[in-house]
Each structure stands twice: as structure tokens, then as C-alpha cells.
Image (cartoon, rainbow, N blue to C red; front, top):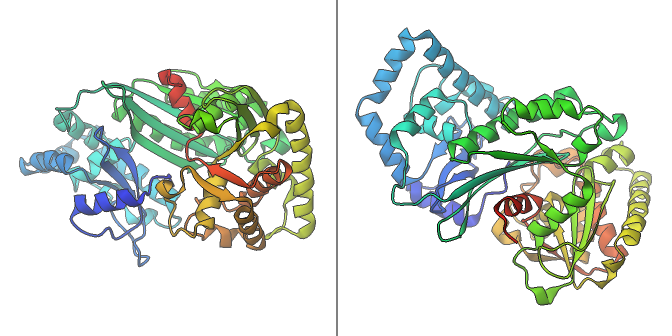
Length: 468
């Protein structure tokens, strides 16, 4: 699931639909004016019943434009073509099958809920097909609708659009941004799916082909979404799992099947620089020096800089939520001896960080980025959903972080995964990630962390745009 379920978005979508949403959703595509364009509904509604339409067009201007097509009899003509044109029929059926697979990825056992718009054959709703196309679906009908109705906001002068993908050990994330004519940066898409690409890499030194294939399905949809939004190039950057793998060519080939540019596999030092650029950009210089902690699945970066966005001392350590979980935790919930082993592993890496970043003790502001930090803050605040607006650049105290870690350590993976703010797939590794966060704060005398939603993903976008 993405991190785009803001309280303000709920209010806007309520106004766009003219009623209260009946299922959980996330905004995955925005108009260049900033409002929601496409939402991704959970396959089950609040009562646990199947929800037929997964991708929903919400922008009133877009809805009206597509409605004009439907009023002109477009659906009837397309269904006639569906009956007589075998190639077109096969393309429509592929779109339905892919959409059904996306439902299943989000919630096991929901594939039978159907494809685009909840149907299994033919064309039922052009709005649903257009939304699926914008969301990255390989949808021949949605693409045809796009050619007929776009631009949705003709008065908007399109600026420079870029798309970046952060390929991590645990998650694959997309950000599409536009730099408007006046220089303003507008977010058009922001998504995150936990694909566990790096599962097992620490032990075997190689990527699992099944994990690469699983990740490729998500990446392919990201690339199509970026192109549907007018980003000419998708810049893919891979970090710990891919750089550590002896068979990284499997991943590179999976990217090249969908893009015309090889993924950039960066080292830990560059990863640290980009994390610092994204995580500290816009902070006040007088609050420096800054120490940024970025807890990944395979590595954790420590970066110090006196000025926001400019890393000076940095190190990438071989510890992360996935790597340490695989090394130390075998029982569910973790046994006391396993938690102690986890603590010792972290202390060893903190020794390394302290030697490599001698200015680490001079920092005035400790910035914590990554899904571990934001999830800890969401739990500490008692949120009933993961709302970035309530989390971004808020303070997490050491006491709250310790309390959350203690509570999570006593839960099973299923219990952690059931928490409303826990992203699917994170429940199994959050204890190790939290132990890194708490261990770092204790080691360096940090009493509070400034939790940031902005991290390496935003840093990649800033770097591509020459910002900061």
C-alpha cells in the first residue's frame, strides 16, 4: 500500500464523489493541480464484502470528459469490436486478468472479484478502464480513452515531468513529479509496494528469481503509470539487495524489459547522500548540524551535514530490517535470546558508524527516515490509518520509541500485520528495524527524532531535477 491516505485527501474525495467512501483507499494518481485523480480502493469494503472497482476516477473534470464519450455510444462500439476482433478481445481480456491479479496481490482470495470495473469480459465502464490505464494497467481501452479525452485540464501548461523508482531490499517505490512553469514541484504519483526483492540475499548472496519476477510485476505497472502521466523516462535506482547480489543481471534484465535505460546500482555512500538530500531538504540551517538515519531492508545509512541537503560525513552499514531479521530472529514472537542477539549485532554496526562519522555526536537535530520510523510514529500517535500529514516532521521521543518496540516485540507477525498503520509485508521485519532506531537513539544520546516522510525517493527526484 502507498503512503497517500491523508486526512485532507479523504475530505477531497468525499467532495468529489458526493458521498462518504465505503472502503479504504489511497490516492495513487494526482492531477497537476494537486487534487486526487485516481484512487486505489481496497478489494474488500468496510464490511468485508468484495468491492468491485479497484481503480476509481475521482477528478470531476475527468469524469465529465469520459462521460461525454460514454454518452456518445463509445461503449457499444467497443463491445461490438470486442466480439469480432480477436486481437482486441485478447487485449481486453489481458487487462481484466492483470487487474484481477492486482486485486489478489492486495488481498489474497479476491481474484474472483473480477477485472477492470469488476467484470471478467467485455467493456463495462470507460471510467474504470481509464483509471486503470492511469494507474499503470496494460489497458487497451483505457489508452484509447486517454487519447480521446486528454488533456483533462487544457488550461494547465505542462512543465518538466520526471519519474524515479527507488528499488530497495524490501520495497519498490515510485514517484512522479512535475516542475511547473513557475518552478513549483507537484507530485503526480507516489506509491510503495513491499516486494521483498532482497529476501535471502544476506544468506545466499544471490537474488531469488521468484522475488525478481514478483518485483517485476510491480515495476512494470510503475513504468506504464509514469508513461501514462507523461514522464518520458523512468529512472530506476537500486540499492543494497541488488548491489550485494552476485546475479544482479537478473534484476537488470527485468528492468530493461520495461524501460530503455539500465537501472543505476548505487553504492552505500551515494545512497547516504541521496537520503540526506531528500530527508533534510527544506529544514532550517540554524537547526544543524543534522544527523540522518535511514533504515533500509539491507543497509542503514548514517549521514551528518551542517546544511540541509548537503551531506558531509556518511557511512552505509550492513544492517537493515530484513538482513537482521534473517540473521537473528527465528521464533514468532522473537525470543529474549534473539532480541539480545539483535542488540549485539546492532551495537557492532554502531561502532562502525561512530568511527566512520566522527561528527556524529555534534548533531543538533536527529532526522529519522524510512518506513520503520514513520510506522513507529504512527503507532506512537495512536493513528487509525497511516496519514503522512500527521507524521511528517513530527517529533518521536526516545521513550515512545522504546514503548512501541517493546509492544511490537511481544506480538506475533500476524498481530503486528493487523495494526491499521502497518504496511502489508512490514510486520515481519519491523522489530529489527525498530531495534536499529532505538539502539541508535540510545547509543548517541538522542532524546527525540524528527520523523520525515521524505527520504531517498524524494532525494532521487531532487537530484534528477537539480534541486538542492
